[in-house]
Every structure is written in structure tokens, then in C-alpha cells.
Length: 320
Image 1 (spheres, rainbow, N blue to C red):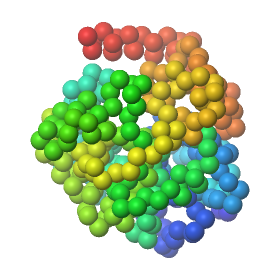
Image 2 (cartoon, rainbow, N blue to C red):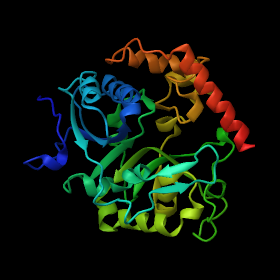
Image 3 (cartoon, rainbow, N blue to C red):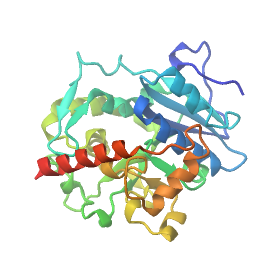
């Protein structure tokens, strides 16, 4: 397979989805290329031999050198990569809020880049019927084909609900305007780090436009970026996945729980494996796959670790 180091908007031909291809979408800037390489390499390592990945990456100004380094970390015979330019024709500062200040101190400012995930149905070729979205701070421990093969039925998307282990799991814990939106106290709130999109239904009901309108009209209620927006817009029309497809608390997981997980999601900002000073079992899983990439041998310097710990301490102080 050729090295597809191109932007999809410059393609002279139309991409067609082959039956054995699993369509995956990620988003990254230059700072997250390394963990993105772990996410995709781990997915390929656990993928059935007869399956291939067609990967689309929203390009948040990634340097060419890092793109080449990312591509060299993958088996390009099993993974075709397409770079998606920033969808500025759909989202731009003239039509959209450039920055929203979240009421949550650990989120702070929500920039315009946050909303790119909402454009997946419009930026991917119209012939594609579904796509898996993955955050780039996770490790895939299972065959992604099994997630792809789950029947999406008539849902807008499939996702994993927030778990009781976090203490908060229902919509009222996250959406400040839940009553106005018609939710009940027991409605679940899903995490948007692992999603399976029903692109056909999304396009038919113009869901991207509804998401954009929601952001414009409800800025003061948004705390968790596009995750809030997606929960508000799809309401009860989403399918709940097995929690193993998005294990959101790796630092507290035992070795046995890690081995039985499908996807480990390092969603705690201060506890990313490549940031922490104190290691935990899931860290080693991350570094096992990192050693298979062109970032093999990467470790944070002591000064970087001290600086990050200082920033976390200041954040906690400000939040109180």
C-alpha cells in the first residue's frame, strides 16, 4: 500500500469503503501525536488478520516530521491514513464562538478545535455509513472489529455510560440545563472518548447543524465541550456499549481488570501515562505499545514531571 501522506480535500478520486475496512476517526495536534501513535498501533496489534483500518485524522497543525514519524509507527499494509484539514468552512470564528469559558475549573477554556468531532458526518465521504471515533489518549486491548460489528440499530451512536466508580454517572451531574432539555434524574450520561457513529442517520436528521445551533444558544451551560453537546442532542437515542469498551479509570484498575478490558481510556488530565511521576499498572500497558512505535524509549524528564506536578497542584488550589 502506498504511504497516504495527503489531505482528503486534495484527493482527485472518491474514497470507497471496502467491506473489510473499519473506518476510524481521531483528532490530534502536534502535542498528541505520540499518544495517538500508541492508540492506533495498539488497535492494529489486536485486530483480526483479515481486517484493515481506514484511519481519518483531524489535523490540528501537526508538523510534517511528526506525521512521518506517526506513519512509520504503523503497518501501512493494514492501515490507510488520511489527514483531514481543519473544517473551517463548517466551523469558523465568524460563525461560531471561538472560545467558551467552562464553569468547571479543570476544563477552563473550550476552544473552537473542540467542535471538530461534530463534523464527522460532513467531512467523511458521503458513501460511508458508520465510523468509530477514538480519543487519542487510550489503548485498544481488543479486536476493534468486534466493536465495528455491533449492530447500531436505529441509534445515532453507540457509547459507554459514565460509571458508578466515578461517583457521577447521570445527566444531572453534567448538564446544567437538564430539566430544560427534558431529561429525567435517572438518564445516563455517556463519555465521548469512544463512539460508533451512525453516519446515515446523523446526516438524514442534520445532527451536525443541530449540534452547532446548540453550542451557539447554550454556551453558558457547557462544561465538558462537545461531550455535553452530543449528550444533549442525541438524548435517549443512543445505544449503551459494554463498559469494557471504554474503561475510564485505569489508575485504579488491577492487572486482572486491565487484561480483561477492551479499551483503556486515560481521561484524567493529570494522570496520563506519559505525564505521571508515580507509575500504575495501566502505565505499563501503555508503554508496552509505545515501545512498538517510533517513540520507543520516550520518558518524561524529571524537570518535566516536576513542572506538571506543580501545575496540577495550582489547578487544585484554584478549584477550591
